[in-house]
Structures are given as C-alpha cells and as structure tokens.
Image 1 (tube, rainbow, N blue to C red):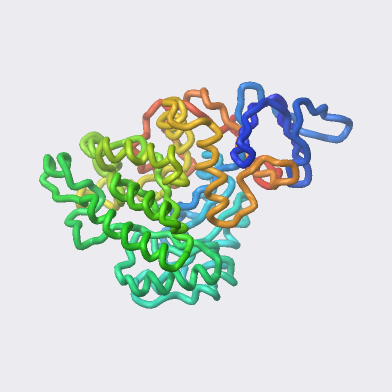
Image 2 (image 1 turned 135 degrees about the horizontal axis):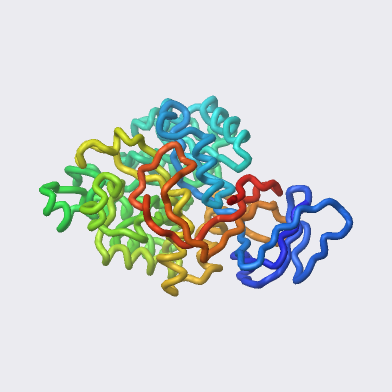
Length: 423
C-alpha cells in the first residue's frame, strides 16, 4: 500500500483541484479524503506537501524504434524516458523495421512492453510495409492487441484507400492517426518554408502541405464517422480545418507537441538539425494558433512525438539529417511554461490534455483519480528547477538540452507500483 499525504490532487475527469490524501491498495485507488491515517497495515507514506498528484500521463505518439532500429532507442529505454517524464501509458508508432503490420510484431511490442512496468501499447500500420498501397488486415492486428492504426512518418496519398481504412477502423472501433504532409509541396522537409528557409537558401515545407491533407482527411472522417487523430498539428490553417470539421460533427481529434508550442522556425538558426522535425516549427502566428486551439478544445491532446536519433545522424548537414527530437522527459515543464504559467490553461485543463483526452481517444479506463480507478499516477513538483542535461533515453537529440526547466516529476506510479522516483 502507498499513502500520498497532503498533495494537491488534480483530477481532470472530475474537474477538481484540491488538497488531500490518496490511499493506493492492490493496484487501485482505494480512498481519497482530506485526511487518511496510515493505520496498522504496512504502508509506504509519501509526503506530498507542495507536490501535485494527477493521473499518469498518456502519450498517444512515441517512437521506440523497436524492432529494428534499436541503436536509436528500444522499448526498455523508451519506457525509462517515459517513466522519468511521468508517463504511465504510451502508444508506439508502427514505423519500425519490420513495420508493425503483422500480428507477430504487434505481440512482440506487447511482450517487451510488459517488462517495463508501464503500459506500452502498439499502434499497427494502416498499409503493408508502410507503402501506402495495400491495407493491412486490421481485424487480425486488433485481435493481436493493436490499439489503433497509423503509417506515421509517411502521409497516405491515396484518398480512396484512406476512406476504406477509415471505414474498417470505424467497424473495429479503433482510432486512426494521420501524418499530414503532402510531399508534392515540399522540397526539403523538416524546415518551414518562410523567412528562415529563405535565409538558409532552402525551400523547405510550406504549411499548405499540411493544410491540404488535413482538409481532405477531416472531410473523409466526416463522411465515414471514423475516429481520426490529426497528428502533431503545426499550422494555423490546420487548426482551423479541425475546428470546422468538429463543428460539422466529425469525430476528429488533434494532438500538438510541446516543441511546436514552445519554439518557432527561428530555432533552426540556433539549434540546427536539433530543431528539424516533420511537420516543421512554423511562425509565431502558428504557435499562437496552436495555443488557442488547445484553449477552445480544437486540439485535444499534447503528444510528444518522441523521435530518437543517433548523434551521428543528427550531425549531418541540415538537408540530410533525419527529422525529429526526443520529448518524453521535457514535456511536463515545457507545457507548464507555455500554458499554465502564462495563464492559457489551468492545471486541470493541462492534465485533461495530457491524460484524460488521450485515454478517451483510445477507450482506456484511465485519466481519472476516482476511487476504484487504476492507480496510474504522477506526482510532480511544478516549481522544482532542473537542467536538461542527461536523459534516460538512449538518444539526446533535443534543442532543450542545457535549458533550465521548471517542473519535475518526483514519482511515477503505475498499477500501484512506484516505477520511477526522483532521488
């Protein structure tokens, strides 16, 4: 048993923010009250004074590179980064080698995930080999344990295939996640087409590449009724497309990364390839539109798109280096800084974006702190300062390395077990 005494309890499901005690027993939240005495049973008491207790974070978009690319990350090191960041559930993308397009690979991810102490869930591929041509056997993948479908990293260009995939995913009651960048408009990916790309002599990736596919898939989602997640949204136009689709009744969701909330295209000049990602960092106008989208409910979730790469890969020239950064260990302080301290979101609203809404998308009985719920919790100090200089991840490709951050996870508890403790 674990007793968390005197912490600030933030429950996005109930919309409450209050001080009290939480008793954890047999993997569940046994009791929540203003004061709970330890009693005679053996119980570990955690002093929660000055700390916040919330549902464990859920990341709907991570790359653990396992199988096949484990020099960048593997399921164990990825989960270690997740635990350090306060995450108790993660959804792994399918762009591994081999791709997660067979029941065998789905089961591999699940079995390796069971060794981590947190919930590691596999999203399976929409198309075989991520080739965008032939649909996978979604039903067989669901039976093996896939929780959703995505070809993330690669946009699906065949509209008729997208429609068929949405129809099948709806039948199976699982969500689809889409990477929205039309390569027809892109000459150099990872960098926004704008003032910075012009300064560097690189054409880059214009927002119309994102906006056009978001518009298409929002309308197909409206037609099919499928649950569709627009991944790592980055442009003001795409936010407006999602807003309109929701208003029309589409079951469209959207996620945004901490780095798109924090940085703009100017970061490429300072951090080089460490600020290169797909879709790219865009303008201050876009960044403000993303925050407004979070505020008004257009954007439902904060997801890290944790994308590890080796140092050698990221040290290549800007046009040759791979896109993506790690993000699990820095997500909380970046979100606190960009959203809560600025008054854009309350703490309850932030926890809704980081735990409750991701759980709802994937039909997980998570994201709440009610009695009887699974004891998947994060306990953090919103004011603790620390420097991002060492990572649990196997990779270190982040523009935030060396930043002084405010907000530190102290305990991550999954199924009633302390799986991470800040020492």
